[in-house]
Image (cartoon, rainbow, N blue to C red):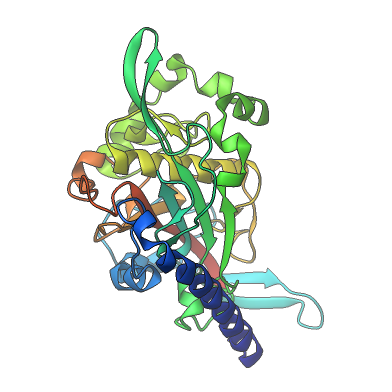
Length: 352
């Protein structure tokens, strides 16, 4: 990594830390108002301590595992990935770059899914004086077909947080994202996140894939993702045992808060793909540069719960919540119901 890039990343990180300190200083003044709702934590420090560093593996050269891993079944390699040598086009005067094909898991984003609006557990504070709004962060019994079922509305915060680059673990710019830290999205200011009717207009396929008949077709994905840890990508409207992905908003109907939060984050990821705000890297084309992927591939993404109680490894989308969620959301705890996830992405790159 060049000296200029390192200085730029450090400056961005300093600005981000100053931003956190300014808001946390105001949160200490109103500590009594926060207590029991949005508990102050060490935030980023805890996340770095609890990050699953072994989850970066398997590390492969082409299709040959250099450092293997047996955590979960790996996605099927992209077509044309057999060769360990790659050639990428470059601007003049280089024109072509020859490298080696590497694949690994990269902690790329930080996602918060909170029941309390304006709560930022990763940063350790809550924004005071903000209006929560209607049905935001409230659990309720909703009458569906004359039956009562629990329903919760979560908020999502999405951070650009390339861990390896920020802490100078990455030395190859071709294989690691080098963007700075940024709070890229807050659902509290996005009306469409709260209203499923608006989501139906923004994502018209919701009426097709959100009906009970299409959800019944998700059974193979629920078995594969839920019990084997291998999501079936062609069932893109399904999230394994987490339910259906449509409509991609913050409302859930379940009794498992950790599983609910994971499902909401997965829906948001689907929404990012559909909006072409997330890019593909796990392909021969993606080895040389990222490109939009409006249809998500669930097997390329995994979530690791880090707050309030960390899980020691990441989980595939749709993995059975009963296996990994017990004890991760302690009732009546000041930190309960506000979650932080490290979002891992499968990286396929032409490095040197």
